Image (cartoon, rainbow, N blue to C red; front, side, top):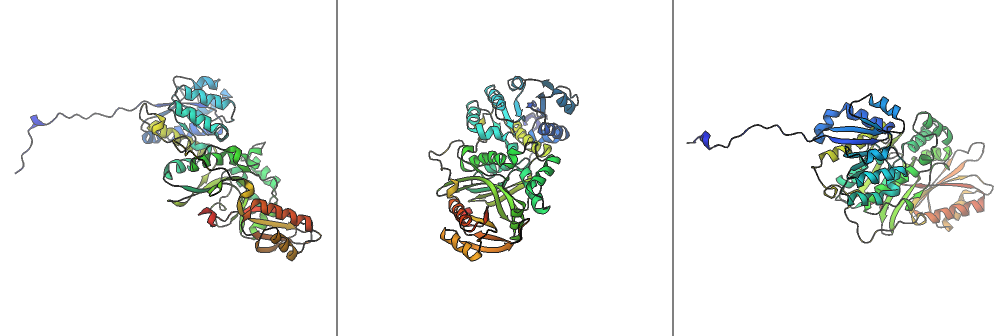
Length: 461
């Protein structure tokens, strides 16, 4: 028999609605493409974002170079203060988090340092700032117990920083290889699919808004190098070493190189590669041949993608929109949601470390000089007065470069003789460069050389 409890013995219970935590107050520096995207996405998905964050996220102040443009984007939203001085916003006691979306590495450094010193978390999309001053900013953030978040600084809306610092935190990362610059990828896509030369593809990218009037950061590989330095720090627990990244851009590339690579079953991509081996860490950005069926080769237009190889998870690939207002805003808001979820008064040390590790090993792997990096090589030999296939192969072999595959390609523009296309076995970069130079000296042939990344080679295992 069951006895019902006496009402007088039961504790008194009353339904209480949980109190809603106060809104996360955000101040935004910069109201360009990304800033406007953040505002639009936050307004459109405000209730959804608040439900996931556990409290509302409100933009309460904006500092912009052109206040009139910012006011037009804000549409007279009540409660948002427009400021002319970013430093005033960075030190504003009514702001919990500073969004730095203005770019550059000079004034932005001062704003971020001031915000951290005044007890504010910082979210930025500024890869140049972090690549040049990341070590200093991470140290200051830790000293003040604040978070410095930057998911939007690499690959736009593709969550590659979170993947490395959180999803793959238990892995020993062997290698990263990515297409991290949408402008260069658009150019290369059009050179292959449209048969355009570099100048025409660049002009098209500028007309569509993918490339700036001064495209140097993108075309010369500097933007990708900034991002690679950040990813390598998170992957390998090493300092941010922008100075150690070997960088080559697209300016020396010809449409004939891209067409010849396609003839052999490859696409040309501007790759950012970080790989840890027994001799050190490779850090390099340069055009390379990628097998046409590989996920990196299939990235078209302005898309970004990153291949990560870890000891436990194996191979993982992340791809998507690498630029644009709303894709980048998606990453910015993801960082804001993380901050909104922190318990009141939480110290940054309780969360995800800025550069992936709370403490570094005493001995850090040294960057490997490019001359010692081993890859396969693609040689495109434009006819010279003494070029003979058999002699060319003998010369390369004597110089230490073994050819695994050869084919004849179409004659270069204005020429009659076909070009000789060669794929070599893996060899140090210095050996390949010396072999190409010797071949030119002896035969008069113009030797165009690109590296080949197959990703199935033992170096990536």
